[in-house]
Length: 589
Image 1 (cartoon, rainbow, N blue to C red):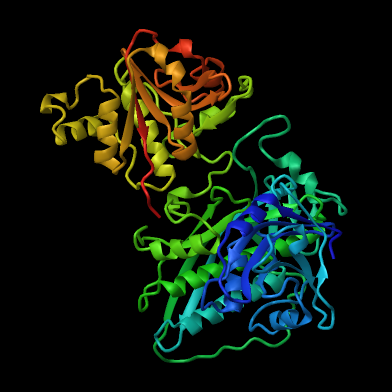
Image 2 (image 1 turned 30 degrees about the horizontal axis):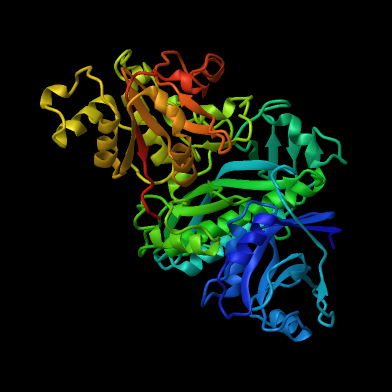
């Protein structure tokens, strides 16, 4: 049993604001367990009419390796749990209670506090015992290394009667997973083979090393900062023969005549593991193998769920870290099927993990982008996160753009729009935000498509297409609505000097909408990514992304020369009129 149990304070707040059913088992507590500590960071709700055994496996297969179910949420009618309730839990069909579990016990009267947690031990005759838990900010990322295993596994399915049935698929998957877990044929490689981890041996590290020694192989290195989680990539090799593979019987050939069908599935494995720093390296191998098998099990479920007669959709892996969660979800979607078709699946996942139902969080475009991953088009992702010193105003708060966007500026895409295309580029940045957040599957529009959209709605005549004429905030709002169905609010000031008084409105926009703002005035357009605002003094600064940059995609030049940075009210032309386009989030799933 771990010596310490930590419960994330945000999880406790979520438990206290949730609505519960009358069922005994309400959900599973998600966390990470080591010899010294259990960290509980999330909740998976048990949906009505759910097979508990299948659901428990489904939840754990959706989590990164080493993150697992550590406890239960239980509804009782008494103020404290009893032996009778504990026995009812143990008798639930399919519920795995072989490990020590933390139980959050709910009742109708009391708020959930640190006194609401108890131990459920495997021994039948042990009375419920209160668990000593520490409530606070609990983060498993800071004490773990994220490994990422990407490889291809070929699965050959042979049907002897000419039909590919679910039972045949189950048998082949079971055989494949047994082979991975038992044969020891996999070898995991780090740093181009300088470190090799196999079942029998570790090459390149001391035998008593812990996972923390792998830190030096991370790309960022000491002293660098990134808003993205970094992963340690692992390659996989498979030995064709193992030392213990001596045949136990003579080979034989069986010749059979009949109709047979063979299907080969090329499964693209993409597995995440969050391995605690204190974990001995010698214990990592089974974690990696089990994580691969868990993903294979999820792929099998996906293949069977969307199978159409003998047509199988290729399963694809997507990793997500939805807003407000402290863990990764790995979801398998069938390739080729549309987001609209998958809405029922996404809604179920939103219900299980307590995600809002009016905001896309698990669409393909919501996938997590890890540090070092390339962005299509070579654009820079979230340049403002590279600003080292934000120098907050006295008694102020930061109100910033939420999530991902890409920086669009002059001269990109091999297109010369110098001195006239700044508002077009700001619009492209706004559209990129809606793409990353799952509100549209349409690509970022180019200048001609923007101009054609304005012609199509009757705002411009046909001569506007392929011209070098400017657009402003109103045209940007028209394009957002016409091209991707996003409405906007327009905030106007008669002079740039008035922008200093708009801190409260802008802070509210970033708090409630979180979208970047396009601002146009005089002959210039910019993108506002956030504000630093003091409710006490009214002081205000703007986080500006400048589309007038004509250089290459060099983040240090962009930050050091102020193309993305904090500006005071004096940055604006004090006598020019300004319009701001504030895009509004649609309600969607």
